[in-house]
Amino acid sequence: MIKTDILIIGAGPTGLFTVFEAGLLKLKCHLIDALPQPGGQCSELYPKKPIYDIPGFPEILAGDLTSNLLEQGKQFQPGFTLGERAETIEKLEDGSFIVTTNKGTQHHAPIIAIAGGLGSFEPRKPQLENIDMYEDNGLAYFIKDPEVYRDKKVVISGGGDSALDWSIYLADVASEVTLIHRRNEFRGALDSVERVQELKLINKINIITPAEITALHGETKIEGVSVTKDGETKTIEADAFIPLFGLSPKLGPIGDWGLEIEKNAIKVDTVDYQTNIPGIYAIGDVNTYEGKLKLILCGFHEATLMCQSAYKRLNPGKKYVLKYTTVSGINGFDGSRKESPKAVVKAIV
Amino acid sequence: MQDVTIHITDRDGEKHTVLAPTDMAMNLMEIIRSYELAPEGTIGICGGMAMCASCQCYVTSKHRINTMEDEEEAMLSEAFNVKNNSRLSCQIPISDILNELEIELAPEC
Image 1: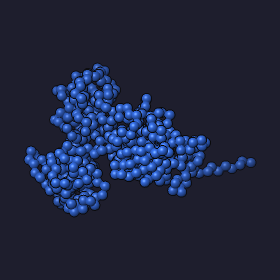
Image 2: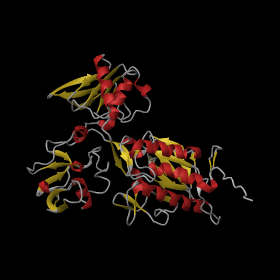
Image 3: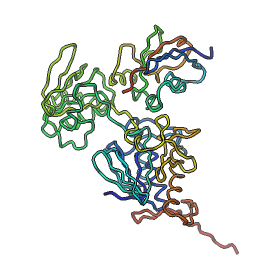
Image 4: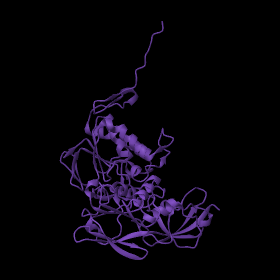
C-alpha cells in the first residue's frame, strides 16, 4: 500500500503545483493519473501550443510548463501512479482514506486532493462490434510496454502524432506494422510524417489510406481486422490492434464518491476548496463555485489555499505563519536546500 | 449588425433559437457553451483549438460559411459520427453571414 500525506488525483498543472506548495509545508504527495505521463491536457492535447496567461511567462509552451512544474516539485520527491484511474474510495475510522485504482493499486492518505481537470482521460473508442471483448486481449489504447509487440503483427489506426510516433517506434520492434487512416493526410509533426514515409518506402510500415477498420476478428483475442477502402473490405492478419483516436475526459468513478456534483464539476467551499466530504478537496478545473474560472492560474491559487487548509487539518492547534520562499528558502525532502544569497552589510564609519 | 440569430438543435433533439453577438470575437462553440446547450465538460474540451471533436456539429442550413482549414479537416478525419456537413463549431467565428444559421450538435463521444 502506498502511503502519503496528500493523495492528488490528477497530474495536470494544478496537481503538479500542489506538490510544491505541500512540500513547503513538509507534506508529502503522491499523484494518480489515468494518463501514462504527467501533464494532463497540457501534455496530452496541446504540448506545442503556447500559453500566454501564466504569470511571469509572456509565452510558454504547454509542454514546457509541465516540465517546469515537474522540475519545481522534484525536490519534494512526489510519487506517481500513472496509467491508472482512481476507482474507489474508502473512509477509515480515523478519517483517512484508501483509494484504489482500476488496476488494484491501493493508496492511503489523510488528505485527498482531486485535481482531475475535466475528469480522467479515457481513450475514444471506435464504434466496432465486440471491441470491449478484445481490450487487453490484443487491443490497447495506450502503449505502456512496447516490448509486448516484439515480433508481432501490429495494426495501428489513427492519423495524429500518437499514431505516427508509435508506428515509427514499433517499426523496429514488431514483425509487421500497418497504419490505417481515414485520409491520405496525417495530422502530426512534419518530421514524423516524413519518417513514416521513409519507413513505408523500405517496407517497414504498411500504410492503408483512405481506409477504416470496420471489424475485429478472433475467438478470444485479436487475430485479424477488416479494412474497408474504396468500398471494398479485406481482412488482414494481426496480433495486435492499437486504435489511437485521442482522448475524451470523463468525470468517471469520482462522480460516485458521494461528492456534491453540479454541472459535471465538484462543488467546493471557497474558503479552502474542501468538498462536502471533510478531508477531500477539489482544485482546478474539476471544481465549481460561484464565480469559478477554469484557468490554470486559478488552479494554482486554489492549490495553495488547499495546502494551507490541509496542513491545519493534519496539525490541529499547531501555530503556523506563512513564510515567503525568499525568506525561508526551500528544504527539499531529498536533502537539498535552496535559499537566496545573504546580503552583505558593511558598516559605514 | 450586432447580433445574429442562430437555430441550434441540442443532443436531445430540442431546438433553440439564440442571439449571438458579432462584435465579441466569439465562435459558435462559445455561443453553445454560453447558452448551456450542452453539459459542461462535454463541449469545447480543448478550449477551441480544433484539437478535440467535442464541439462537432452538423450545418443543416444552406449558409456559405468560412472554409474549413487543415487543422479542422484533420481533426474531423479522426472524429466519430462525421457526416458531409460536419464542422467543428469552435472553428466557426460568429459573423453577419451566420444569420439564421441552423445547426445540430453531433452526439457526444
